Image (cartoon, rainbow, N blue to C red):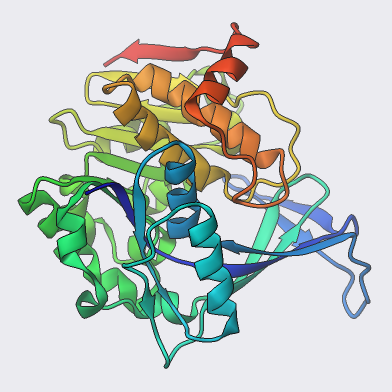
Length: 349
């Protein structure tokens, strides 16, 4: 019996950090975008370089295991030397590897992560075997023996397993938490509705939620100042549209602006926990998995779970790597004691 099984991507990540990155902002009347830029044709000096394992399924499994839960993962990797690094990492975290799928046809996923002086990052990703997970690869018997299934973003052809996996979890009383990636979201809400309605917890970042609901978050204008609201009215619309009642929880993360949640009765807003940002990579996975784990640990206390998850995410961004900085529940509580002012804003429906 497992407490959690995660499913999603697994990668070998090459982290590259250099202060030579330029942050370029481009604004229009309705949008603002930022780009990481380097001089064209130049040779750039690297300040820091490292190889680590990553991917949503591994990042979240490592967090669940670090929080003391019996954890396994369903991932598809290659059968080359890079895959051994992934397997070694899983074993080091005490994650069960019996459900890992090895492929001789496809290479293990690989990413190059470019980190800026601000701590944000741009990721160049080769999906590899991550995009080739098939229904026949999945050990459904293992899912049946788990209390929770956490679906991290799936890529390429792997998105085709979503409905069957969600249906199986529901039919066998397995709780489901999902963090949809852009590959799945591009299918449109209509094609994802079955999976969305099945999930006890839905977690998206603001851009993903906007893409899925087709609701744009309006910027401040001369006549309207939305930034004065605790939760932007357009984010409230997203939370409502993605919540299907019956005690289900919808979460939208918003980077440095914190996180928002809705349980069909109350809205919650939680700011970032204080941290010195080194790299934001893995913060989303850390928050999502820590929230899900904390909800189990606290018997469904959303307010406390948001605090716990924010502390874990803050610890991750203080380190160079998506799997560095995990905390135990005792360590989370100790950090919260040092910041009694840290709170969650709660608003009724």
